[in-house]
Image 1 (spheres, helix red, strand yellow):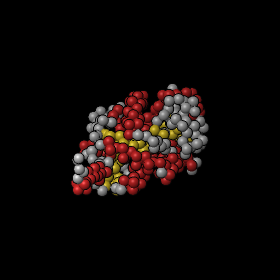
Image 2 (cartoon, rainbow, N blue to C red):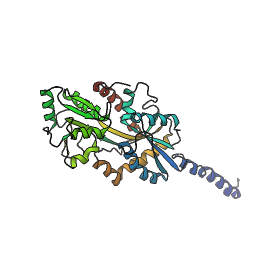
Image 3 (cartoon, rainbow, N blue to C red):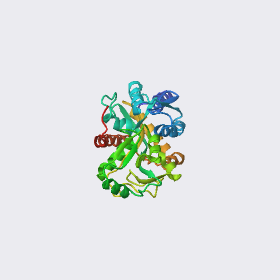
Image 4 (cartoon, one colour):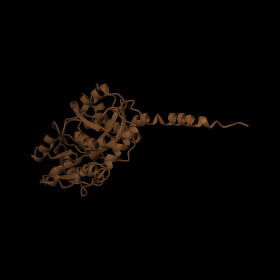
Length: 331
């Protein structure tokens, strides 16, 4: 009869469990940067829309990850300088991330002849943060009270109406160009060096119209500007009484300035999934969500990394067409 050697059990069991359990602490760390701080690169100046997005999520995200999130601003050439620097220097270790935007990662390829990075292939999409649909604005004393009023005036005198934008190829320019093309209008584009001077020109009477995001809602609430339509598929919670362009009779005018978090090419899936989960949780938190919504943004906290990648690809296709009809030339 075979005898069971009970004396070997404690040693065998000990070896078995040590083999099973010892890798667990190491595995638990593979979904995060090994350093105490994670850099979040913003390829725009401090104080802008993308910088605000980054700083709104940095602290709560850091708390969820047990890391410090350090926002690093690297501005220049419409986001291209900071993005190029990120692609050249960031390692796929989860310690350096970037705020990818529609401007740098979906529009710049059609505005710069010698871009130093591939707009999607050099990145790992992680999480969508928010998008701010463009809004058509007029002065509060403008004779135009609806999109139809603008269309009627523009068609009555082709080339007479003018609109301001934040610059050639800016989100505001492309949204206005899409509106003009969709409605069959001939309007004069007056580009400025940024949204602030463009809106100042509108309020000062130098132009008839302007397009921008919810950054200008303060002027609407103060009574200085009137919002006529939003370039989104649904009305904004911040402007419940303002129709979409489709509701106003002009279909196909969907254009927003969007931002999301991305990593360098080759970022491990474990890190991508963890970061996506935590960023989405931050975007669903009442404090963060309410801030974005009241300032005219739309949220998609359920978006997976793959869905973000698909969205990104669709934005590239859309922008190639819109840049072409806008008349903006690659530099």
